[in-house]
Amino acid sequence: MHSNSSADKPLVLLGHPGHELRIYGWLKKTQPEVWVITDGSGAISEPRIGLSKDVLQSLGLTPGSLFGAYTDREIYTLVLKGELDFFVKMAMQVASHLISGGHNFIVSDASEGYNPTHDLCCLIAQSAAQKASRDSGRFIPHYTFPLTGHPDGDTTQHAPADITVTLDEEMGGAKIQAALNYAQSVDGTLLKEVQETVERFGTEIFKNERLLSNTAVDYENQFSSQVPFYEQHGERRMANGSYTEVIKFRKHMLPIAKALYTFAAGENLPIDADLDHQ
View 1 (cartoon, rainbow, N blue to C red):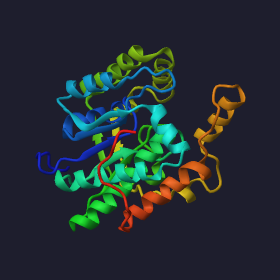
View 2 (view 1 turned 60 degrees about the horizontal axis):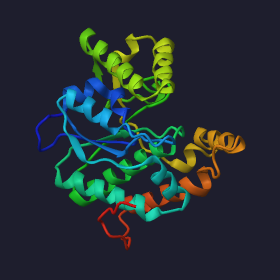
View 3 (view 1 turned 135 degrees about the horizontal axis):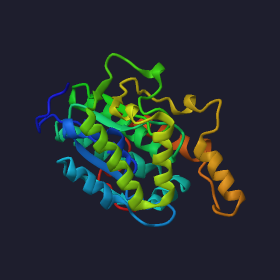
C-alpha cells in the first residue's frame, strides 16, 4: 500500500458529494486530500456538500481547497454552452496541485456514461495526471472507482496494480450506516437507491473496495456504439417537459474531452491557469 505521509498522500477528485461513501474504508485508511467539484444541489437546488464534509470529518479528513464550488446547474450550463476553457482550466488547477502538493497518485469517479459530471471528473483527473507526470518528470497514476453497478467494478478491468481494501465487520457496518444516514438526510429517492443497492448486492459486497488502475479513457471510443445513459435520460426528461435542452455526447461532451486530451498532450493553450468561478 502507498505511504500516508503528508508529502505524498493521494489526491481524490469527486464529481458530486456523496461519492466518498463508495470508498469509505479506503479513505479512512489512507487519509487522502479530497476535492469535490459540485455542491450536489442537482435540479432541486438543495446543496448536500455539508453532509459530505461531515462524513469526511468523521473519517479524520479535512476538505480540500476545491470543495463544492459549483452548482450542478452551473456545470451543466457550461457544458451546454461549450465552455471548453473552463474544464481545461480546472484540469490545469488539478495538475498544478498534484505537483505542488507532491501527490503520488490521483483517484476519481469512473467514466460510465451515467452522469456528465462523473465523466468530466474522470477526464479532468486523467488529463491532469498525464500533464503533471510530464511536467514533474515523475509518473503520477490515475485510479478510478465505479459509481453504478457492482461496487467492485467490472472484473474485465481488474489488474494487479489495482488498490484493494477489505473492511472488517465494524468498518463495513459503519460504511452502510453512513450511506443510509446520508440518504435519509437528502431525499427519499437517494434512500431508495441505497436500499436497492444493498438488496441487489447484499451487505458483504460493500466490504470490498477497489480502485481500478486500468483507467485510460478514450471517450469517443467508449461510446462509439452506444448512447450514454445521461443522453437517453435527458431525452426522456425533455419529452415530458422537465428539460428544455439535453446534454449530448457528440455535441457537448466529446469536444470537452478532446480539449482535455490536447491539454494532456502538453500543447500550449492560451488560458489563464486561475480558475474563476463562473
